[in-house]
Each structure stands twice: as C-alpha cells, then as structure tokens.
Length: 356
Image 1 (cartoon, rainbow, N blue to C red):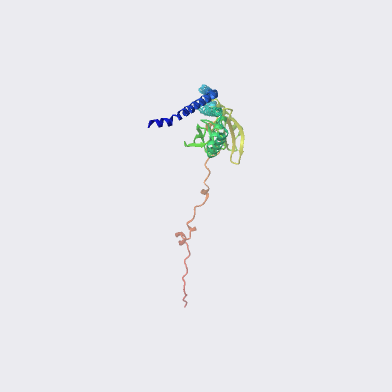
Image 2 (image 1 turned 90 degrees about the vertical axis):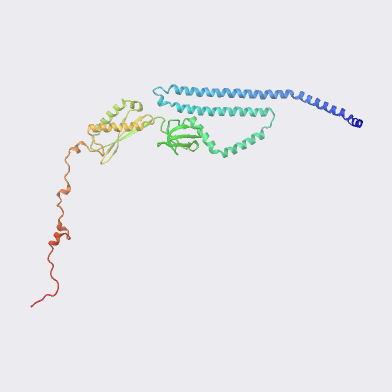
C-alpha cells in the first residue's frame, strides 16, 4: 500500500524544491538589488526626523529664553519709582507667555508638518490626493468653527499689538471694566459693581483703553457773576501750586493745573474751567481733591459759589413779610357767618294787608 504513494509523490518532490530554490533566488536577488535603495531611504527618513527634532528643540528653547528675558526685564523695573507707572509685571508676564505659547505652537506645527511631508515624499507616496483631502477637510473644519477661529486670530493680534493688558480699564463696547485676565479666545473683565464679564475676542469691534498714555482731570467752578475774576484766578492758582507740591499728588499730576478761563457766562452764574494732565486712571481722585481744596479756599476768601449763601447775605436783616401789611379777613365777608346774618335786614311780612 505504501509503494504507490511513494510512486505518486516522488516525481513532484524535485519540482517543489526547484520552485523553492527559484523563489529564494529571486528574493535574494530582489533584496540584493534594492537594499541600497532601502538603506538610502531609511537613512534619509532618519536624517529628516533627527533634523526636525533638533530644530524644534532649539527653536522652542530660544523662544522660552526670549520670554524669560522679557519677564526679567519687567521684574527689574517693578520695584523702581516708575515701575508702577510704566510697567505692569503681571500684564507683561501674561502677554509674554501668550506670545511664547503661540510661537512655540506655530514653530512645532510648521517643523513637524514639513518633516512629515518630506518623509512621505521619501517613501515615494503621491501627496496630491492627500493634500487635496487635507485642504477640503481644513475648509470644512474652518467653516464649522469659524467663530472659534475668529476669536483665536483676534486674540493673537490683540496680544501682539498690545491693545490692552492686565490691570487696564477698558471699554469694549459689549462690556467695560478692569482687565483681570487676557486669553487667546476670551478676555475677562471686572465690572464697576464687582461682576465678571467674559468677552469673546472676536466680538470686540472697538476698544477704548482708559489706562494708556495719560488722562485729563477737569473741574468746573461755578461762582456768582458779581465775583472778581482776578481774585478767583488767584485763589485757584494758589490751590493748584500747593497741591502740585504735596505727596502723592506730585506723582499723579503729570502737568501743571491750568485755569483755562470762562467756559460759560449766564445771568445767575459763570463757570471757570480748570484742567490738569494726570496719571492714567487717577483723574477722578485728582478732580475730587481739587474740588475739596477750591471749596475751602473760596470759603476763606469769601467767594460765593452758586447755590451757597455768602457772608453778606448771612448778616443782612431778614426781608419784611409781605403778608404783614395785609388786613386780616373780615367775618362780614362771609354771608353765612353769624355776624353777617345778624346785620341782615329784617324781612317784610308776606301776604294781603288789611285796611279799615
């Protein structure tokens, strides 16, 4: 029984060995022919990845060092006399960190994206369909998340242009208050009543920064039209000179207090305009202190302010009562009073008269 099996399988054995030998020979020849290309491609991919990693690390470290240097420069002047006026350390820190985060993300995306495309090109993969699909997907994602993209881009340009920062008092149109946090998508404001506003950067169409540059303090002084204008100017000038030399007003005032002149003249009053250039955000405190000092100086000089009573009017005799010269009303003026009824004539009897 076993012989026929041997007879049947014996002729096929050489054919199978021959095919295996040919397959091994072809594989060896294929490897021998392409091993150089494979090695070249592998070394090229490895070189691309190494260069991309080194370049990304160097750029990120350079950006981090630059941001740290900015923070150190802000901290160096924070304790000086002008540090609180010209530099806000927290604002500089948040702004620099936001810019550093954006720069690091952009650098990583560009380097790694370029390296990935170069690796696919080294593998001889057709990038046309891939780039087309990525473009269509990017357009779809950008259209669906257009508000998010708008907020992000607005935040980036806002930070780069330094439109406002932590500690600034701004009017953003949709809300106003003091900036307590600046982000790439949302800006957080503290309102006048303590509320917190979360404002999306893409919704801000205009921004009024009340903390940059300088501010103007304006005071309107209303006096009687009979007052001597030269004396009014002299008193206000003395108050301004004394205030400019005292602390802390000598730091909050960035210019002399000026009497601009008459702003309005009416029959019952005239308005003298007083103005001064102040530190940003300190104009209201300067106005309140200036009004306080001017009122005290006017009281000492006897200058009457509209709405007040001067010393001459206080010492004058009171005006006579107009009703004192009018006679009291008479009871006879009322026909229903008992006096009127008593003086009324006796009525004549009615009816026929009898005669003899």
